[in-house]
Image (tube, rainbow, N blue to C red; front, side, top):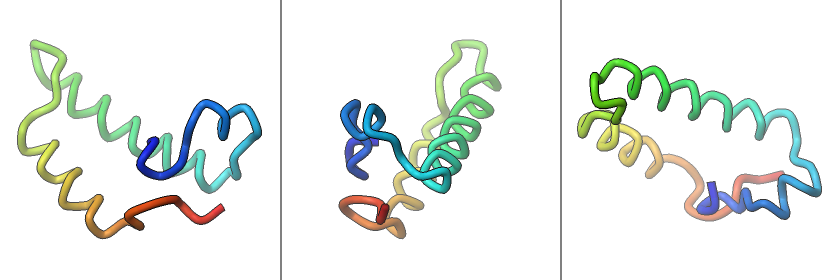
Length: 64
């Protein structure tokens, strides 16, 4: 989240609903993958996919 400028201070100030939607989407993907493992950890493949997908995102801050 910090990569996109979503810090504790940003959360305290308030962030737009569309940014919350993105955060919730990431959390749902993470938890869905994590809960598939007996050790409650994400798979290497999931981590690699998230890293690849992040390359397509803005490298700094999400536009507010």
